[in-house]
Amino acid sequence: MPTKIHFLLNDRAVCTSEPGGLLVLDYLRKKEHLAGTKEGCKEGDCGACVVLIGDLEGEKVHYRPVTSCLTPLGELQGKHLVTIEGLNLADDLSPVQQAIVAEGGSQCGFCTPGIVVSLTGFLMQEGWDVSPAGIKKALSGHLCRCTGYASLKRAGKILQNTIAKDLVQTKSRIETLIALGALPAYFRDIPARLRALPAMHTEEAALPSEFMVAGGTDIYVQKGEALPEARVKILNLYPEIRGITRQNGHIRIGALTTFEEIAHHPQILEIMPEMPQYLHLIASWQVCNRATLGGNIINASPIGDMTAIFLALEAELVLCEGIKSRSVAIKEFYKGYKKLDKTPGEILTEVVVPVRDRETKFNFEKVSKRKCLDIASVTSAVRVKLDKGAIGDIALTMGGVAPIPLFMRNTCAYLLGKPVSKDTVKGAMPVAQSEISPISDIRGSSDYKRLLVRQFLIAHLCKLFPESVKARDLI
Image 1: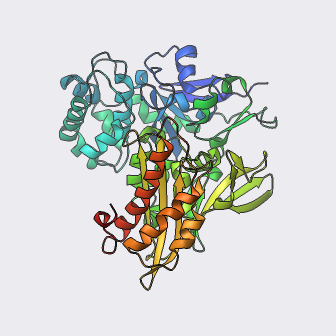
Image 2: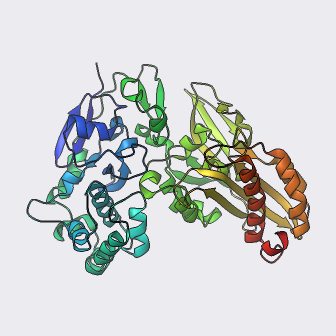
Image 3: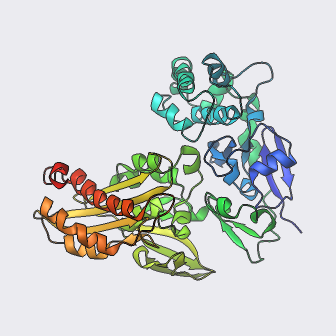
């Protein structure tokens, strides 16, 4: 008997037996005939398919914009799915739509529904300021080839000038947005309606799964055609492997914790204050709301951004199979291209990071064809601490220059105990070059990637120790 999925779609309850691996985008367009959600790139890059997903958290529903082309239908159990049709008001445009019209922010209209959804979702975030930086973040996952972005940013300025004050002064953004005409009135009843939904019937849960889906940001790009017809285990239905805590000198991060949750959590910001800036380079807000730390690590891409970061943090990975669990150091986890120290039945449940003292410094660098939101050509991270002027502890990683995310063991060994100086950096360069084995591909030639490794060595130490290393001395 197929699994039944219960959720709210805009203002009505839905119970469906469609496959859990079916994309939300395809379900909306082909089964519900809601064509406002557009199919563009189907890779999470263009934003035409953005919807809101609301999760009941305590007494409130927290909404986040996501790309429906990377979201499995099975994940909607017990949630509120909102499309552009669910935001349209019966008699008038919403303030978001009015602002876009006023500034000429829509021409062909293909991208506009997703943009309206993201901007509305941005206004719904409790505690967030309606600022130019916030508007840019809300628009970060959207491409518009007709109008460009200046008109959309001006539309955001209208929102800042007209409704931002009302949102700051309210205890409930949902109520205020309803009063302002930015949300339909049915949003008021969603928490009670979600609590009344039946639980999922999981008759298929005991069957072996062909695929495990977390954020879906890569697997749906690679194998999207196979997933709707396959037996899929939706990992996001297991919230116990999500969240961030601190215990006994370690930060424990559930494998299903999203990039967005990691970017702003106080425990993460304590050890990496620039994490929000790093995420600005890595992915859009809409994709960060989907992508998970565990998925990035298990994907084993040589250019995984978060993998490079947590490799430099020398994290431990907790792998579970049934009631059995074990830990493995992340720098021992990658055995070859897409080969892991992991059995087929094991699931990564936690990433454990030691908390080091405040003298420890961290930096992340990335170069890609686009400055932001693109697959890296080469990525790198470093964690370093000085001891009496010399390097007392260091972990350096490089991505995109070997078959695996590379922990630069020999380079770290060379740097250990040496002073931070131009001579030390120059001496480390040939050691680093001997450790890497880049190949030429669409993201750059092998020679270009070797040059980036050299430049990253300089960038790391110049940024962390500007009083000791000057870039001009290393040209």
